[in-house]
Amino acid sequence: MNRKIGLLFTAAACGLLVTSCGDDETPDPEPTESPTPTPTPPTAGDEFDLDSDFAATSGNANYIYAYFTADGDMDAVFSSAARVNGGASISYTAATQAVSFTFPDLGDAVTFDQDDVVNFVTMPEAEATYSRDDEGLELFVPFSEVMRVLYTRSNQAFTRDEVDGTLQSNRVSLFFRPVTTDADIDTTLSFTGDVDVRGGDPGETASDAISSNETTVTITPGATDTISGTIVIFDDTSGTATEAARCDLDTTVAADGTFAGTCDDTDNDLNWQYAGSLAGDEREEIFIIFGATADNDPDDTSDDDDDRRYVGSFIGD
Image (cartoon, rainbow, N blue to C red; front, top):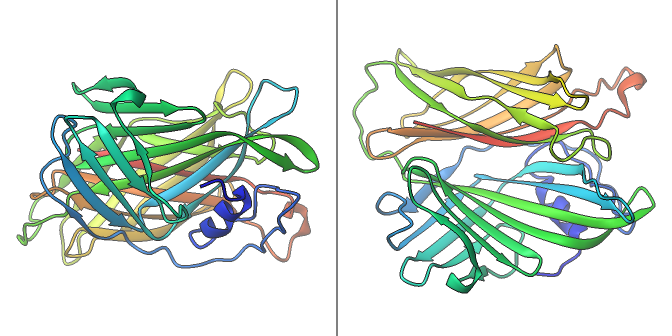
């Protein structure tokens, strides 16, 4: 698992417009645009419950972000981020609180057990947090049909823009129970939940400056079922939160509950990609994974140094 961190973002580049986070030992890949695939049909059994055993897989439901701390500095800044395509898996045993997690760019599964548990809460939101040396894992189940898993590695030696320091890398996967009903959506569905978001201007934005608010997403039935709602990202760099990014969701939901779309955030000069799925036997929940990058106009050199990017997810019920 101790592979060069530059490979982490090379793998991530398949998900969004992305450049490397500045490892002086790794060439910066050119920004490339690729499609935003919908999450693949997952395997999952009963509802996610940290008091019961479970195992699940999912595909194209991942993202990654990192923070850099310069030597001699106490403050971490955002370094890079992207959506990541590929498969992830998780296996959990309740009796020993043992968990095994795989991510697209990890050669081996990471494992933790009850000796590594630092926090375990099952009501009202289920959360298990593990920590060992410079590694950590968090399982978060805000409701019951979708689980967000965060794997963190800290204190990795790293050089950014010729400045030595350390990197904290964070890999996130979402697991969800698929929709099993084949009944048509005949009434408006509404889902409310929190947004997890990371990002900013690489090398500049403080690690705790980016946030979002509670969001409501709606599925409207019709000749084609459509998703609507707004995700807003805020940047608090001087004590006042200002809007940094905004996406008005508007795309078709497929029969299996999956969807993918894009939006042009012209006010903030950003391009967004997002994908997600309804979740649960009867469409009880929804999740969205998103990414946004600066809209660099090839005919305008004034914005060539704009490297802003954001990634995150929304889970609602």
